[in-house]
Amino acid sequence: MFTLRAAKREDLARNFEIWRTSVLATHQFLSAEDFDEIGELVEKSYLPTADFTVAVDADDTAHGFMGTTGDHVDALFVHAESRGQGIGRLLLHSFLATRSEATVDVNEQNASAKGFYEAMGFDQQGRSDTDSEGRPYPILHMRWRRERDPTVKT
Image 1 (cartoon, helix red, strand yellow):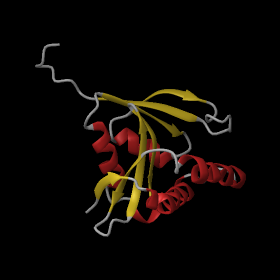
Image 2: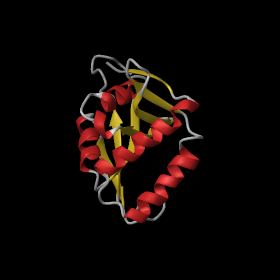
Image 3: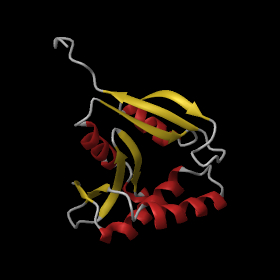
């Protein structure tokens, strides 16, 4: 059983481990140089400054984390050893519960992430040939919209 809480400074090392194992399991398309460069940015610049929600076990050990801005999912990573236990779904459901729509950008070559977001009701709305840094990793722009109740007049 996992619960959600806000990330604490003490979670930094574990969150980097979560990011690293998740990316190694799902981003085989990254060159070693890009993995190292992105990893350094994530560890030193992104994780220490962004707000995250973490999914923790009964011992308060983080197994996944999610970062968001407004209605956009910036990051959702689950430790490679914890995949398939509903952690990503728990994190995303908690975020979507308070929204009527949301967006996420996914690496096109990351088939498991694309499939996960599609299973969660996201549809592709666009595509970019490169990532935000101009690297040759195409990005899919996806959107989720809450189903409207047809009996409610707007």
